[in-house]
Image (tube, rainbow, N blue to C red; front, side, top):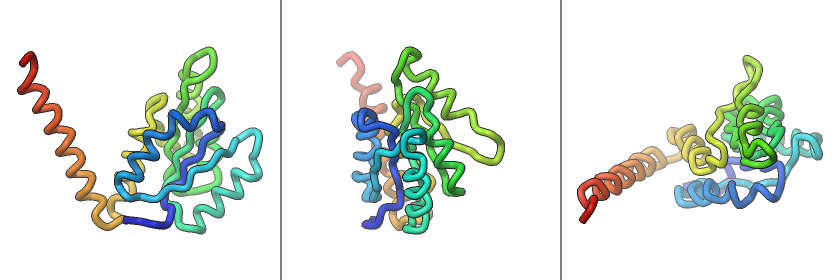
Length: 163
């Protein structure tokens, strides 16, 4: 569908990659190109800002930001763009992701971050696809077919329960 990256996936640490990878796979399966980067809101703030501004100019339409603990990456990215930002809290630290969830979801008025569940990379990818569906030819139909397949799996399991 698209060769040029229209989704940017950012993570605060390389350690987050395993939790982000299921979302990357979904975007690939749907033919939506993504650029994946490791950038930190705290350790590389200048490079983070530079990437966001450049990615927006290069045609990125949605940012997915994965971070644990303080989880400020999504908020920092949102402060530099008016494109949709999806926060992906990562389970880490003593609170096992609850701190990440709260840090990601609590944004000031006017700087929104859509937030998915802790380690919810798949839903982050699906949300990005839903945001993009009217901009990428065939994506809306692909999403509808995917939902239909999900429903068929549930109905098959219901029909074959206990057999």
